[in-house]
Amino acid sequence: MPEKFTNIEKTTSSTTKLEEDTDVKYKGDYLKVIGYKNFEFVSEPHMVVILPYLRDEGFILLRHEYIPTFQYFYKDSPDYKTITNFLSVITGTVEEGETLVNCVRRELYEEAGVVLSNMYQVEIDKNLFLSKGNVAQYHTCFVELRYNDYKVVPPKSDGSEAEDLSKTIKISIGDIDDIKTHDLITEYMITKFKLDYDLK
Image (cartoon, rainbow, N blue to C red):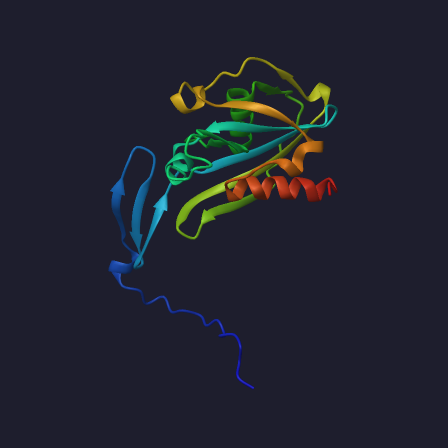
């Protein structure tokens, strides 16, 4: 009977200097394209991904976000070509020297106006690569909040045009099955939330 799977073999370390060197093919304001070991990939900043759950109210918080990437993809679609904003989880770039926990706290303040209590313990759930073609990681975080865990203030915003055109909205967990997702990480976070809280 033929083998169905190929055995994984150890590779030797006798790689050439050319394969070891990093070649920056493109550098923009936000991302780089890197050549490394005969492979090309994108290098972006790491991100925190946050799904807040207001337990006492029965709501989750999502972004109604202005996303030019999706607008471009759907520009010829009769159903989506006039749509500028899409539902997504709260995300934010980890700044240089910033801890993941501090980034979660900052992004909740900037995007949702949620200021966490100093006593609230933020826990990072998973660290996931964006894709095989990107060295950026998503650091996922589920934030279950009771009344005394936070206060709500006007969002600070980061001052960008995209953030000014976006807003954070409350969605009842009773409507969670009606959420239309467009990206993998939002779908993952909502699906995991439903599984964790046995919402079927």
